[in-house]
Structure formats: structure tokens, C-alpha cells
Image 1: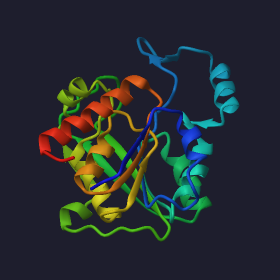
Image 2 (image 1 turned 60 degrees about the vertical axis):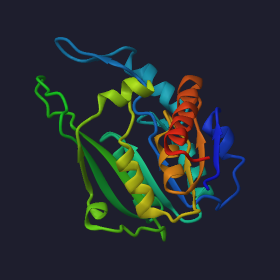
Image 3 (image 1 turned 180 degrees about the vertical axis):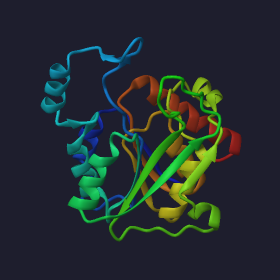
Length: 237
């Protein structure tokens, strides 16, 4: 039976108290860019560019991501074995950190949304999200051809967003695939951006121990409810 630990807290406060080399696999979907944009005749940022750059520098942020968290994730990971959902703007920064800096092997998994809304503003459709997998001696053993594919295609389930009240719910089958491929039963998986709890649900189903952290109380409560609902549905403890 899985040991599920959930914390409603800032992930930096929890990570600093985790022992070195205590986590087998990390699966995270960190927040994307912090600033909103408006369109109409041309895009413009809500705040001045200088204010944004000042804010990013002050908080050690790069494309909306706190780089200090990466250092902590590497510290608690037994061997670098990590999946990071990201947007295309974050990819160069993450590749530089892990591939150039940490000398990791990597794969880029593409989540293609087959029913994404078309774009009519002189740019390509936003129909793909990315999952960067980095490892340095980490475990990767897909069980079948489908699990080994770097392309995951599925219709975007807007019902999940409404059901679980979170704007970026990831497909449970995709998260299960990542966990299956890169961990074993009884391993400990960490998600320090828990959101609505998809990674926790997947770990419980796949018999992995789990540590999850979510700072937003609303999303944390949704995750608790979702895990309990899944347990009742499956008749598990």
C-alpha cells in the first residue's frame, strides 16, 4: 500500500527539510510565466518590461521558474531522474541547467492535444505541451512500444478542468506512463507543484510512495478530495 504524504505549504519550505538522496523520481508541472498578456491590435505586457525583469531578478526567476528549486530537487533526488512539464520558453533554460550544467541525458516528450482550438493570429496553434525528461543514471525502462514513444496524443479533456477546478490538469494516463517508465513499486515519487493531485492519484494506483506539495489551499483541498474519491471508487484504503 502506498504511503501518501501531502503538504499545503511553499515547496521551498518542504524541500529544504527533505534528506539528501531521498527521492527516486520527480514529476513536476511548475507554473509558467507569471505575467499575463493582453491582445488586440498587438500584444502588450500589463506591467512595464523593466518592472518584470526587476521582479524576475529579485526572486531569482527565469521564465517564471525559481531556479533555486532545481538545486533542491537535484539534492533530494537519489540520481537525477526527473520529468518537467514546461512550455517552449522554459526549454532552453532547463536544457542549459540539466544537459550543459549537470551533463544529463534527456528526452523530450510531446503531449499533442488533438482537439486544441485553432489560432487565428498569425502563429502556430498552441496544441502541444512538452515534458522534459532528464536523468543521470536514473531508471528508465518502458514496458511496451507505446510507453516508449515520445509522443502522447489525446483529446484535451475540458471536463477534468471543470470537475477538479484546476486550469492545467494533465491526463492521468500520461502521468501514469511517466511513473511506470521511470520508477518501481515502492519507490518514492515527489511532486512539489501538486495542483489538483494527478501525480498522487497515479502513484496510489501504481503502488508508489508519494510526497506532494501545493501552496494553494483551494487546489490542495481539491487534491485531497480527488485522492479520497479515487480510493472510494477503487475500494482501496
